[in-house]
Length: 224
Image 1: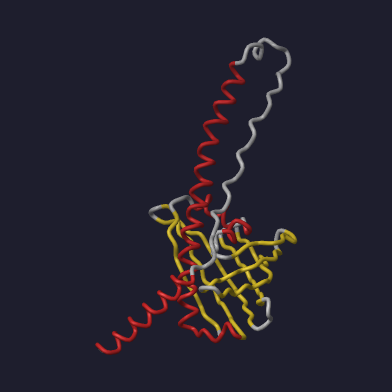
Image 2 (image 1 turned 45 degrees about the vertical axis):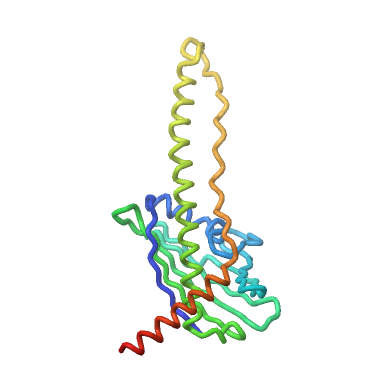
């Protein structure tokens, strides 16, 4: 079973700042509910896990994520991934293209993904898969936007501090009269903001969304 997902999310930051965050695969994974990078093989290959919990039950997938291409000129990222659950009864694969484009309020993140499921996971059907995707991507968008804004704020705060440090060094006694420039200790750079912790997908919220969509479809058929 295959599902095609296309989404556009507004980001209240610049294209460059958003693109920088999008290239941080580990941080991006940390924004996805239930997802985690467990091993960085190199800059283009990673291993990770994804867990979806519905009530007391949980589906946990282990697999790989590969960076197929990074187009800095077009601000476009192409990822593929595949994995299987711990029991070997379900599998999934993903082909994702994400890009950043300028918008009136800052920029927007556009994504198109093809997700294929097999085994027990495919029994949920396309409608359930679409609802799951909407839940996951909605939470991801909020987490990713918060990450971009946090890192953009760090960069903005660091610039005045660096300028102030340069001014203090220029005004320090002995600098102008000394024949040799005195070395100044560099100001330590701030650590990039960590990705927000993304909890596992909320099963109750998922079940409610499925029921809501089912009722909406039922009533729309009756009124047609």
